[in-house]
Amino acid sequence: MLQDIAPSVFCLNELNPGARCIVIVASSHGDPGPLGVLANPTAARIPGDVIDRLLWDDLTELVAEYLGYVRLIPVHGACASGIVGLLEAKSVLDSGLFDVAVLLAADSISLLAYTGFQNIGAMSKVGCRPFSGAEEGMTTGEGAVALLLAGPNCRLPPGPRVQVLGGACTCDGEGMVEPSTSGLVATIGTALASAQVSPAQVEFVYWHGTGTARNDMTEASTARAIWPDGNVPTGTASKGLLGHTMGAAAGFSVASAAETLVSGTLPGIPYRIDEKFADLNLAATNRHGQFTRGMCVAMGFGGINAAILLENLDK
Image (cartoon, rainbow, N blue to C red):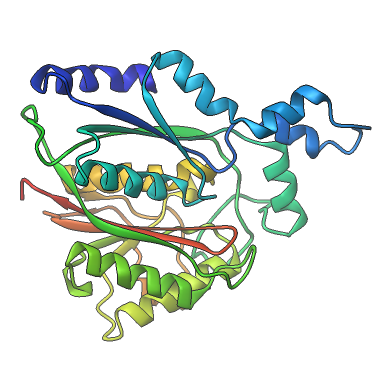
């Protein structure tokens, strides 16, 4: 992933000699290796090297070794890590501390995460199908997303430009593993205010959509609260196709939303949507149009909520 984004970073550096670059590594649990040992019921004791690796994030260290000397910030915001990291990138760029930021959102399948979700009944036996009414649960996945952000004073090469308008991340403290409608509503409200965008100006939403009963109903009630007139923008969710990639999941949503703004295609949900989620105005098939503005929503264990607004600067 870093190899794929490197040419774009080099291009920005050539256009902006001396640009200060920072890399933000967003993950729900970093290197899953030592955590997997904790989930192994046959382990009689925890080896000393595992304890050391629990205290130091190997994933961040691996990125640092690959890139050489570069400023790095690790961000852990559970399954909202991608958006939390992106908002951190926007903050350091807007403040002028750095000129260029690379967000790397990544997670691999972890025995600890799989066991944990299985034990609380959140895993599906047939595959993740958010908003289908089956409410079977989620399917674990893995993946990585890299996004390149340029500060307000950077010269940019020709091509499509998508701007992060604003966003918010909060911790509502209402539950360790269950989402909160009031917490998510408050976060989206703060994100809209940060972006100076009204609910009516949002043209599409990438919902978190894990496929669990509590998640799906929480997002439906959130939509009713944010758009009480019923004019909810078209929505979609990607976990039915990608699985739940944990710390990378929100990064995939943001990358997909950016592609929607550039290409004019909002991917539909490839299965029947239950009528009790009609409030979400979900796309059953691909939608095509000239999109200007969209929003991504994410939630994570510990009461974490995050939302971000994107805009196509070429529309």
